[in-house]
Image 1 (cartoon, each protein chain N blue to C red):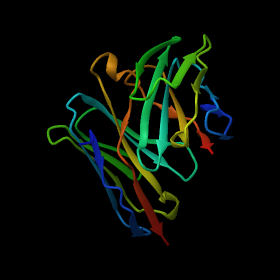
Image 2 (cartoon, rainbow over the protein chains, first blue to last red):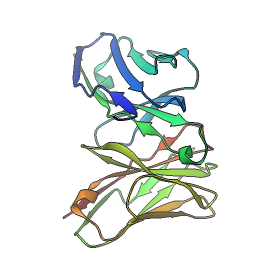
Image 3 (cartoon, rainbow over the protein chains, first blue to last red):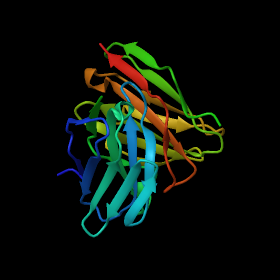
Image 4 (cartoon, each protein chain N blue to C red):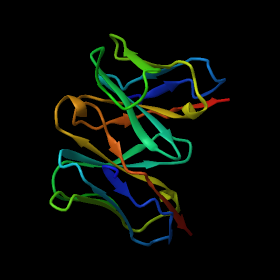
Length: 115
Length: 112
């Protein structure tokens, strides 16, 4: 079983829709949670970063973390065609040497927003 | 502030050859992590360097190695290339553990 599970999609929505992306994890040592966006043939771009349970909002994006359920989500409001990309959840532990600089990623969800 | 840069952007090699990839982190960042991205396995952690020391290593064979220089620039080397090494190799830099990792554009390696 993978430490981080993410529905690969693909997900196709109309412009203006609310998008919900989710990841579950099994490692209780994960303390830092991120969402990255990756366009085709580009490196991942950080969207959201959080380390506590609850919600964090940034413009049209809201990241939600529930440590008790080991579940994180990213919501995109008023989705735009330019949001079409692969969305990756990532997590980092705070558990000593084996966690240094290591992000564990979900498989990524391919999102298409059509006009 | 300039982002993470990686060179070369594209590379074609044949089986058995070796390759060296380079990464320049964001100015002031001392931690550099390397990842391999493939369609089947996704993004997988290779290793992390901080102050010229490898602090962590992922589950990859010894053919994969790296180093970091005093200016925080890092290189990774893959020896005796195999077809399965074809991938996008990404480097990320951060100030320290637990801090945000910023990714470069990657080096796309094709092994024939």
